[in-house]
Amino acid sequence: MKKVFFISLALLLISSLSYSKIRLPEIVGDNMVLQQSTKVRIWGWSGPNSAICITTSWNNKKYSTVSKTDSTWEITVSTTKADCMEKSLVISEYTSFNKAKVSDQKKISGILFGEVWFCSGQSNMQMPLKGFNNQPIENANRYILEAGEYPYVRVATIKNVKALTPQKEVPGKWMISNSENAPWFGGVAYIYAINLYKALKVPVGIINCSWGGSRVEGWLPEWKLSEYPDVDVKDAERVDYKEYLRPMIMYNGMLKPLEKYTIKGFLWYQGESNVSSYKTYAQRLNDMVSLWREEWGLGNIPFYFVEIAPYNYKEGVDFGAYLREQQAMAQKIIPNSVMVSTGDILKPYENNCIHPSNKTIVAERLTLVALSDTYGFKGICFRSPEFDKIELKENESVLFFNNAEEGLTPFENIDGFEAAGVDKVFYPVKARADMRNKSICISSDKIDNIVAIRFCFHNLDTVKIHNTRGFPVIPFRTDNW
Image (cartoon, rainbow, N blue to C red; front, side, top):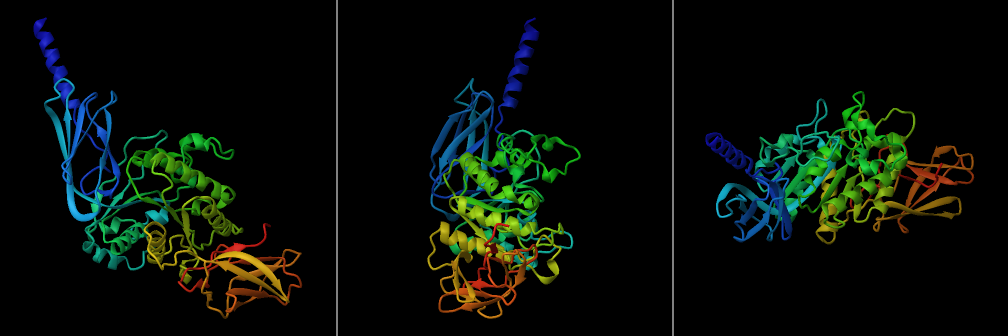
């Protein structure tokens, strides 16, 4: 009996020691970028009720906690001002039965302090530099060739993982910018990162958590979705339902495991999969942003998002125009948000391609927004002209715009405007710029009394008028028909 007892005790101790191993989520690992000059969270798993200590190389401080009975632990450490020196930290575990002895230890190396942005959405955010089949990203080879010049840019690409319940971890390692890794980096997010690095002269980290085809409902939790009368959360389980259209599975499988990672702000490029249910989009995007900010617990951090580009949706209804209208509305109701307009980026042969190849200008506009709105750069224009008001003057309707202080260009041969009278039939109209008043004057030979005006309000309309800093006018309508 004694022999059996001691064998059992030995097995128990061996089991305890093997169980008491530090385990970290992939996002907390080598080459990660931590948000500078703040407090960041480091978390993982170990043995239950074990003492956990983190020692940081940058200030040689020690931070301690005790793991919970479910083996989870979390420690907040302080970061310093960004520089390009790689740092490290050591995580040590002391077992509950001998707190003076280290039972396991892990070192994280190659850490940088800088600016961390969380990028999400559907395929236009996910689209890697190498492109999709038959759908390239413009200048991809140049970005890939030069990737080795930016070793202080790091990207963590999160694997597409579906889940019906909230998960605690998801695959997604930090990768250093070089020509071998860069083809797999999301194009918009990566170009944004190198632009930001050039401007700020500090390391930049990108967490790309995107899933092609996903709807905004896929990035919301079950409890929130249950408030929407047109959403059935059981659709997440349906085997006959396309995965990327399912509600809540991205939130549970990909977003939830990352909410402890300290970030500077969000970039969002999505909307194409919501065009057929456009009426609810602005409010649901607002709900999503509010919820994300609450779960990260970092306040009203920036949320910058991209307008969907022109595309031939083929439904016979201008769903794309209505979705863009909802996006413009979302910009007004979501605090600390800015929409980047893309009505001018489509090439003539891309009418049936939902992935415009010009990701450079999208990333550049996002960069200008961040530099001015978040980082305080002066003298930068970062907003598109928006319709403000209409006035009647003799036989013309005069349109005024915000964010066009120096006027609009071109000031002749202006395309894209339509008007309707009381019969609600729209006709193309003549448009000219009033350079003195920085306005657009509309007139028509076919309409006696203009009661409504629309600008580029069709699926495939390309915007050809900009403010003097190159930002396109946001499509709009004055009616609610």
